[in-house]
Length: 118
Length: 108
Image 1 (cartoon, one colour):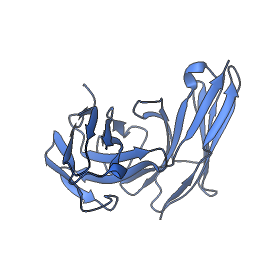
Image 2: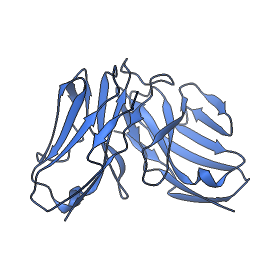
Image 3: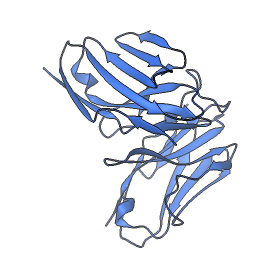
């Protein structure tokens, strides 16, 4: 398996522009998570899906952020309009199943999308 | 709510032993993970503890005390390639919540 695939790897945009980040989870994984990482706040959970259904979006910072998972192999995280404080690395991660993490039910991360908003 | 505390930075010498501590408060606890993250890369899984005690995996060991809300990651025979951030993460129902990580620098 190719692992969790994210695109783009790097994005530089101007304040006010729309940004769309994409993720392809590992085939067969039921859970998909979006995290944001900054130096100040570390790795923050934004939203997660189970079987394509959003379960908890309490970490989404504002209405400017939205996430969708139209099918089991694709998810998007959209920021509209973007602001400089959104600059961060956005990670997508997936896990097999069960809803309860274990040594065999491990979260696997994609390589991340580094976003810079000028 | 959840709260996870780790030291921000640590330094150590090649060949030495280092212990990275993590304290946590969370609801719905179902285990604690340690992840390693090299600069500019994704976090990768190191270890998982759900029961009290020590789990050993090669040069790395992880300890958990559920009653104390405490864990540590022990790295032995340090190598230069161990320079990375080490993230403590606790389960909370279906979620995995991360601490801010400990940046470890290994010097020759």
